[in-house]
Image (cartoon, rainbow, N blue to C red; front, top):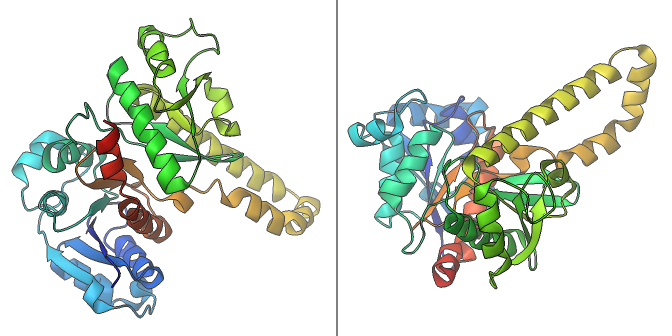
Length: 338
């Protein structure tokens, strides 16, 4: 009998909740029979979404693998995360996090408050013994495939020892979840030379170089990351978040400019029709929704944060990512290394 992966999905999190989350959950259940989804949130709202034909898309699913867990409160993005986690015990985020802590679920997924998710991951789910801090690690599309950026938002002020752990955990994730053999690890720097960078980078570089558990290849500059020559990109959360937002913003601008250029005249519209199919296939890999959410590595259970503007496609892919994470025993492998 197949072992199930049980996920607590924050049904109230995100710009389009609960509709987007419900649709994504149903799609994931349809596509993977080893998944159980617990929709955590306001019961009446979730039931209404499940009954709406536009939301449920007519998907026939195994009702024994979908549960509704009532959580009447919602933590909003503007609320102070620590205070919200302490006061709103009946919120969808806290209830879902506790399901992971208590072993009722293997993973937590949310498109809601990033701050509350980061705080809850550290405080409620808790870190694996030996892990200094849990980084947020999204996959970035590159010319050659995907690169993992660690950290992109959880630890703005990091120490060298923390970055070394980020590198180890990122390598484990890329090797076991993405399937990259001996992933190449690099630290974000302002030049390729070993003596460049701020104090954090200069102190961390020799530690990474001497670390036998990783395949460290040196420094990587921001402009080289999109080419995909590096699999694990190590940095503190301040640098990582700037990289991520710049990456996303540049992508949107370029796509907008490309669309405007193609629609600018009758001639360009004809050209657009001719290249549409090839262009669509080529650009598909740069769609963030293809890769699911960003996991917090190094916790006692899996915590995954998706974009606030997540589509049902991204929710679906994130839920399926949770199955792979559990089946590859990522947490146990991190424990063994750290």
